[in-house]
Length: 270
Figure (cartoon, rainbow, N blue to C red):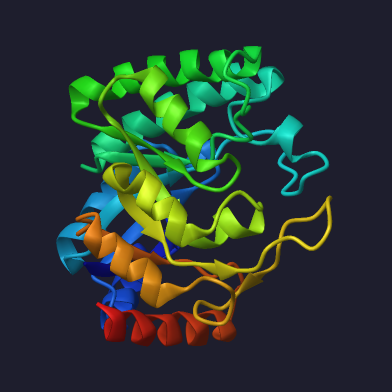
């Protein structure tokens, strides 16, 4: 397993890639929320930075436009491709992400799909399956994979969606903290269920929710409720050999300190 971090496309990519490599991270997920950044100029910038630094981009984390409420109250109506009001434009934006990923020689495109209904016959379940099937079919001839980031749906619901889409080029970006913070599963158990589909990870820590409206709180990796020794063991047991991509959703020097601490924890475990 290789260690990685998350890096935005903005700024001095060569400097940012080199800094990550010097910290012990030979891989990264490239993250883009602003669709205006999917330009040929930025694609050339990414390719140049990869060539000059040797950084491996393990996936493109693609955001989408419109409202986004990261809670239980308004999240189901605003996040991802599930809400019908935003499904069409966000599908188009993921097509654009696939185009950009091809230009930078990246095979995996990742995003949050949203609160996929647990009821198999719910119209939003089938609406989401339909648009994701069209996206996956668009990506498949390019050798690309679409990755669901875990969290907003139960593992069983995620398995059902992958099976119903049925294109063979679907995978999972396994975010251990999200499964807890959304109250959907213990990440160790979820890894056993989802193992064959895991193609990337977010090594992020957190806690279970303590009320019915707000997500559980994020924590520095190793300081929350995720049992990382058990999780890494399960990932090994299911044959996962991909990247361990550390995520810490704060900024500044403390973020760097927490990432370094997480790096050392992972090196001891792997």
